[in-house]
Image 1 (cartoon, rainbow, N blue to C red):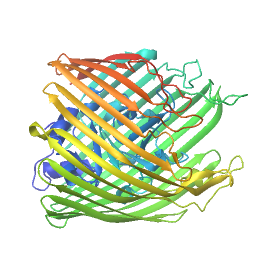
Image 2 (spheres, rainbow, N blue to C red):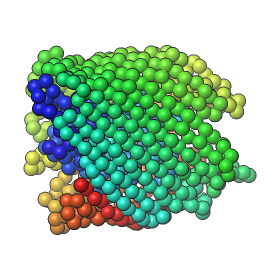
Image 3 (cartoon, rainbow, N blue to C red):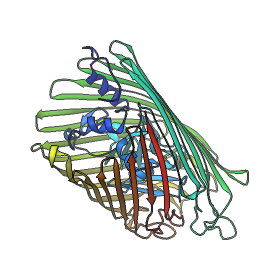
Length: 620
């Protein structure tokens, strides 16, 4: 198997070492290798997100989707947000074209209620008003896989995991590069080089993008350009018998021309505003492995620095940071029972618009993973979080899966989640806003139940249907009457998600999703903002001859509630082609928005029309 090579010794077997590495955020080094390991059948994928340990999909009751590096390359995704658009239950909202602020919502939950973890590091921005994550600069070319874990997940992940968790793993091996160009004066390039042997691994990568862009304001006519660069470093080595060490570093910088609300109308329009952003993620891990006990000690750091200027004059700045220390133990009590337990401590800080605050938090959690018979697996656990600046939270979660036979699987889960008030919400005092130190965490209860059928040769085809419902109480919102943030809202989200992977012939495949999400603000009885009630996607790939692949992607996005006006429903078509000359050289191209559809993700912000791009990829 391609990927990290581990010494096959009794004390540190390849299997054990690989599992520990996965727990720390690792995975196979290339999309092809990942497919070979993860997808012997559609039900044999190994996931890390559900229990924070390597677990076969067939043995978890949680609702999980996986996007592999192979899919990212084949579908020519530019940013992680592009890949997430094709996932069931996920809605993406972006302020215009590349570089615009981009957020992900799972099952109607806001971006602040959706936790993002990159290489084991919580990436949400402590300085953001709701503490959400901005996907604008997350380049897909550095990603090995994305796991989307749906439903409340605070048991293992703590605060902000109400809608679910998006777990991103960057690539750890292989050497390759790409270069492409296209419409709107766009150019992209990337280069990654790595090594591997029995004692360890290392990979360094660089990627960048620049574009002349389009006007972000739909009514504007000036082009808003964007450029960004990302560097990643991953390394690991055997330190002693039973012990390994790992480090990961990620740095991204961007410059985006944005539009604002100029006088006298103060409506969205052309301005000279520029937003500069710097994102940093770093972690160090100490991994231990024994016959019935695995453990990971992690020290992680996340920092975001944003600065806006208008004709050189600073108009906004925000700095946020988080440092976390955690330990997770995976203990095999017996062949049928495993205990996953851990403890965390973190400190967050935010400096934004006159707010300069910090906070501390700590947590302990434990869950039992039980397999009473070969066909049934269930887990149950609890967690307690304490905070320095508001009341703590206790959460629990339970899930079960029944494998009727090798082709039928029934699963169900129930969980609690919470979102901690952000430092911004607790302390913001500008423009007459009243700080509210008495804010309480938002609290959620949710459940889902689903059935999955595998069929076809080697059970590589799959159809899954999941029903879900989540309710959020004490939701934080701005109260105009009291001129501050208060726990005044309630929300309910329910619906169904359908996923299908089909091999229609040896040369023709189809990946389909449909999501019905009835997400309601119970205070106003209206659909939650920027959440379509109906969303469907289809990816069709055809290989007419060896080495040539043709593909089409369709997104059908329903009407969305937004301000100042709702966003109309739209259908977008993308076309792609790739030709592999050798195992080392590939040419590819795509036509985005082939029908030149006029649509908006966010009211008032325009999206690119018809565009064409082409490039070359080299693998060594």
